[in-house]
Amino acid sequence: MSGHDHAHDGHGGDGHGHGPGGHSHGVSADADRRWLAIALALIGGFMAVEVVVGVMANSLALISDAAHMLTDAVSIVLALIAMRLAARPARGGFTYGLKRAEILSAQANGLTLILLGLWLAYEAVRRLMDPPPVEGGLVVVTALAGIAVNVAAAWCISRANRSALVVEGAYQHILNDLFAFIGTAVAGVIVLTTGFRQADAIATLVVVVLMLKAGYGLIRESGRILLEAAPAHVDPDAVGDRLVGHPPVTEVHDLHIWTITSGQAALSAHVLVEPAGDCHAVRRDLERLLEKEYGITHTTLQVDHAQESLLTVGRAGGSPPDAHCADAHGPVHRQGPHDH
Image (cartoon, rainbow, N blue to C red):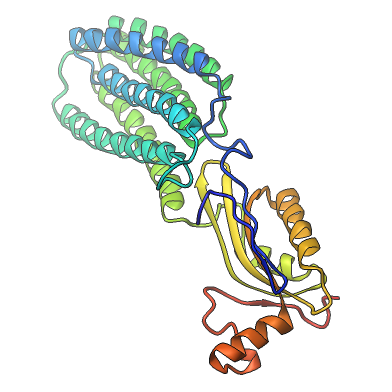
């Protein structure tokens, strides 16, 4: 599908598209980059300190927290980059612009989370079987400081544009990191008061679970977009039935719904109307319906009179009246006698 605007009139058919500059979707220049930059500075600065302290305290839990914070920092950097790329107008062969840079960023971030999580899980299991000495006092102090830093960073990101997958992913990661630091602080207290050194490895495994969950969620959501699946909250069959239930529409086929980037769904369809129907009015009505009920503003609707469509196909290939949509992709939605 093209992001450029095209229109066609002929035999009652209309094509309509919204240009990439007509609406604001997903990662955009309107997102507050300043808040993301502040969160990045907080996370990056504390992460460097935490790695040093984690090595000094011989705490895998602190090192795993630092690894998680690294992925948080990367996700914020990718969000900032994606904002700039998404703000560029569509040109040349990139008819949607570079809006999917956000989705590629989310894929990379999710994969990194999973790989780091698997490595930390291996180290944690190894330490459970042969726990090294851990400086519980350093762990507690560093974890408490980490809680404060994560609260501040989460607040900063909450003030930015969270409608974008990569920004929302960074926000969720920081919340997960906050819970992980709480677990690390508890583990440090246990080590300090009871000498149970395995608590450090157990806290690491808790962090690993959070990392794997977040990584899987990012890969799943971004994968749906890359595979051009319909948005999770939109049922294409229900949309087709809703469109065909709008008089004077008699049939809808070649219905496709996909996601360009976070918060920007697109739809295309071939719509047939009764011979006396006004194709232009139907197209405008359906566009308003799709925007109001489903939040879909990027639409391409080819609207034809049913009788003319049948005659055109018949002249071209001699197909019987009911076979004009036999090669349509996906289900065909027809008006029933009870629908008027």
